[in-house]
Image 1 (tube, rainbow, N blue to C red):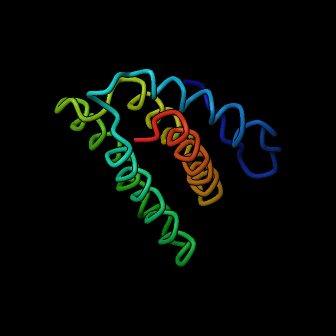
Image 2: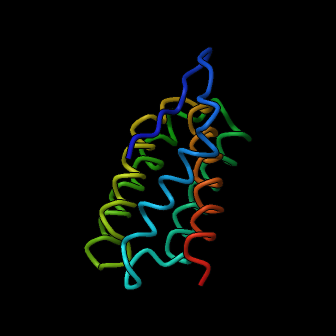
Length: 126
């Protein structure tokens, strides 16, 4: 899944929080009933929000927080191994997390995941 978070000074794709987030949600929702439960995906979103809030409060600590933010890749791999999420969701998180290089890209990724979660709930209401 290709999402592109813009870096400082670059314009955001106008469709990042709309069509791109919707397409990502549709792809992840197509994984079947046994994986990608909204509650499981919400846990990852909540952790992204937690890190975004920490960085907003202490932006000078971003570099110190980054290894722990990127540790979400290990957590989502573990969840995939337990069949709680599928490879589509793993790819989505991996793609976004590798682009998190500063407080601004973390915040953009958090907003993307917020839009993704809204569209996902529409695709898989229960």
